[in-house]
Image (tube, rainbow, N blue to C red; front, side, top):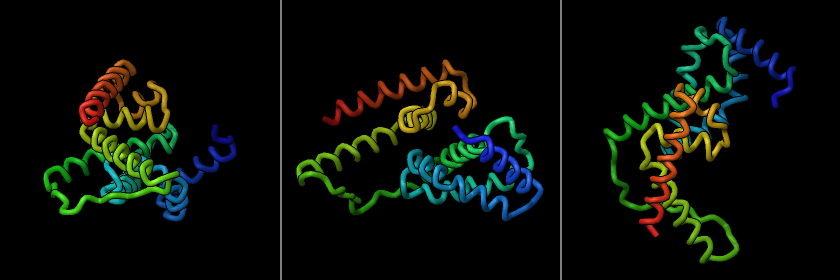
Length: 183
């Protein structure tokens, strides 16, 4: 839970930024950029995440005068980030290139066999999540990665709670199917 003093401080910063104070907006960016980047990475991957985050921040600056404060500022930024991610994925799909060399990242782990297995598991899971539709991917990331409730996901994506639950169920079933086929 966010302490009341921090919330009122953020409201003050938002009001100042809405009236054109760039320093106040810079402070808001500093507070929220990591969460936005993490969300973007989970939605579009590490290659497109910087572009999505930058686009989301530009959109937020332009739309700030329209921010009514009915939702938390962070929730509003998350929604803008999700929309920017969807737009960027559509653009990237039109210009998709096949990499010549597969990029692998090895993590330090107890042993080389374990590290190799984890690289394979992560790559398989990442590919499976990327194969989901934008709506399903967003629900899975927000619910299963960020731990949001179904209602929070529904509010964020501007869908009903039932739609969020159905998308989540279908996405999980598709992920299970994809991962079982791969093993």
